[in-house]
Structures are given as structure tokens and as C-alpha cells.
Amino acid sequence: GAVVSQHPSRVICKSGTSVKIECRSLDFQATTMFWYRQFPKQSLMLMATSNEGSKATYEQGVEKDKFLINHASLTLSTLTVTSAHPEDSSFYICSAHSGQIFKNIQYFGAGTRLSVL
Amino acid sequence: QKEVEQNSGPLSVPEGAIASLNCTYSDRGSQSFFWYRQYSGKSPELIMFIYSNGDKEDGRFTAQLNKASQYVSLLIRDSQPSDSATYLCAVNPLINYQLIWGAGTKLIIKP
Image 1: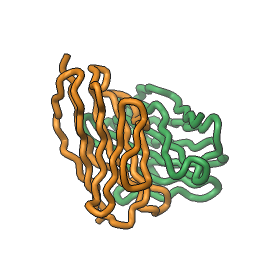
Image 2: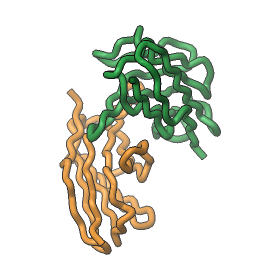
Image 3: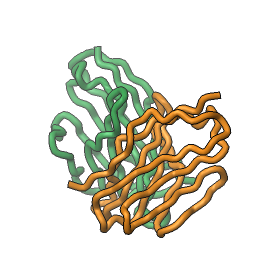
């Protein structure tokens, strides 16, 4: 159990375009989802916490107008990188948390590698 | 500032030996503790979690928690080359279900 699907796994786009990344919990309802970014050889950096039906909470220094998060259902959260630039190239990873059955465990999607040309 | 500290490594261990990974945390109120493994270019995967003081064993892995000393460790017995990865320690301070992450320890198992 506790499978999190993240799509796409890799995306290459031109500077100025927007990219949407989907994160789905397949076999449990995720009350909370998290979005992380990871640069090469660095640790995970939490970008935002996404709660179903409410606005996401962004970490300090993360532009909410650039990284749009929508958590429309208990199984789906999306991250849209708007007007992407080369400095946004990174590994984006989502995780999902049920809040009950799994005792605060976060289960991760496979990640999305974004390359902005 | 809540912190989780790990030695970045790399920690080099011969195949078949015991690998010992350590993690200390600053928030004394933390209640749950996690070890994730991350292969290069992949996302983290949960290895073990522990909530109570003492040892918790799962196959070749043993997690050890000492809340009084504020450290948690992971032992890997009979280390295999496939265990070579970065091991992330995470602590739950019970704030919005967020985890506080260590920077990870790179483990290399030498054949």
C-alpha cells in the first residue's frame, strides 16, 4: 500500500513556458501533500505544504505566484511552475501523508526532473 | 530553529560488515523518527520509522532511538553493494505533519 504516483517523470521545456506536475495518492486519501525541490548533491528543500480544499502554505523564499499549488481532492495535488526559467531546473518531488493510518509517514512520488532551456 | 544533524560522509564500509549511521536532533518534543534511503537521481524511499526508545529491527536494518540523548541511528547488517545510497534522517516535531530533514549521509559499500 501507500503508493504515490508523480507525473511526468521528466520534462524539458523552453524558457517562459509553464509546466504542470501531478501528484496522486493511489491507495489512500492524502489530507496533506508536500512539494520538495532538490538540487544536485543537496538535501531536500521543502517548498510548500498542500492541504486538501485550502490554500497551500509556502516556505519562506518560495514565490507562491511562480509555483502554483492546487490540492483539489484527497488524492491529487498539482504544482505548476509558471514562466519557467533555467534557474528553475531541478528535481521536484511530492510526498503524501494521510494523517491517520500511517502515523505521519510521508510517502514519496518518483520525482520530476525539470530542465528549462 | 529545529535541526537534524547528520555526518555527510561518505561513509565507506566493506561488504558484509555493519554500517552505522547516526543522526541527532534538537527538538526534544519530537515524537516520530524516520530513515529514508535515496539512490542517486531517485526520490527517497522509507526504510524504517521508530516512535519509542530502544531498538526496532526489520530484516537487516535496526533503528535505535534514544530520546534522552536526542539521537537516532540506523544499523545495516551484512552490508551489500546495493545498500550504497544516501540515507536521510527525518524527525517529526508535530507541526503540520512536516518533517525536519537531515542533509543525509552518503554510504558506500565496497565489494
